[in-house]
Image 1 (tube, rainbow, N blue to C red):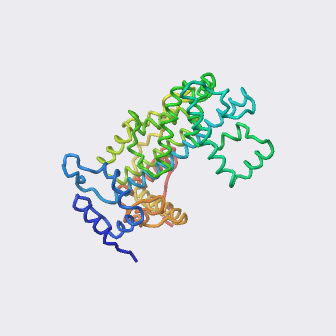
Image 2 (image 1 turned 45 degrees about the vertical axis):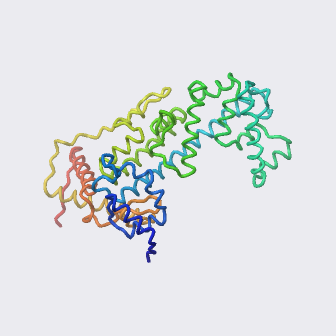
Image 3 (image 1 turned 90 degrees about the horizontal axis):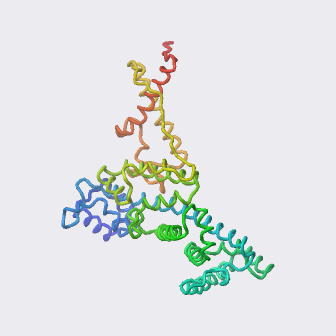
Length: 386
């Protein structure tokens, strides 16, 4: 049973008055109740607005389901980037702790004699000490290993203490290291220390957005945008980590491209700072690494399939869809008018015959190319009439 709230009905009517359309109003009410009308519209609607209209109405044929798709896209993107920014944070902590301990032994990470002594650094250090006292005091309430370490040694070794630095704390520590120590840490990221500090601050801004649920796709940091963040992560992650991240970003873009119209998709890329050739990023050198994979399928243009084989291709396409659907259902997915990875709903959980032509073509082309390849390689496909 759907609970109806007058305030939600008013919000739907307001969206309608601005030109937004709905495929399923009952589902829209559930989504608005669950997600919050304000968070769904403010900021995410920017992609779909007709800027030529003084009232900021929506573009023609814009649906609520597209707005919700962008909202989900942004949420998935935040979760994704947070994973990899956390990897950078862990690396930074490790680089600082090892370099510090190698040079200064087991002295306190916040020992003033081992840090820069200019006026700004001294002020930063005092603030950092207060913040770390609070961090460690909170951790002592639940962290048994921390309790044991303090009890045994009476102090925290750099490799242990660094764990309790928040990302902002560790960036502040990096900024007040002696110049030679900053350079050593920065060398691990193959950049100069000033550039690394600026990049870390940008990543921290993104991390805060991800952690607090703010809008990410239209991120701006001075003159930089979300594409700039991807470039920075390429510099700070190793090759395998970056490629894994890039593939996940690309998969999100492929999914959202299928859920919104072309104009809105290009608006999305523009707001993210992604150029049409953004995929070239994985081919640019980083150290000795070049991601230059180029798919080279066997050319089957000279193969012509007969009607019987084309009918077979259609059966293969139908079976491919059924295999996919069986797997989805076993994983807990169910039919829904909008694809939602969190709630595991997809509009494609329908019989093959009811799929949109675009979805049928995907399965059909795969089947046809497979059958062509079989013949290209010299095999024969014959029907047993028995």
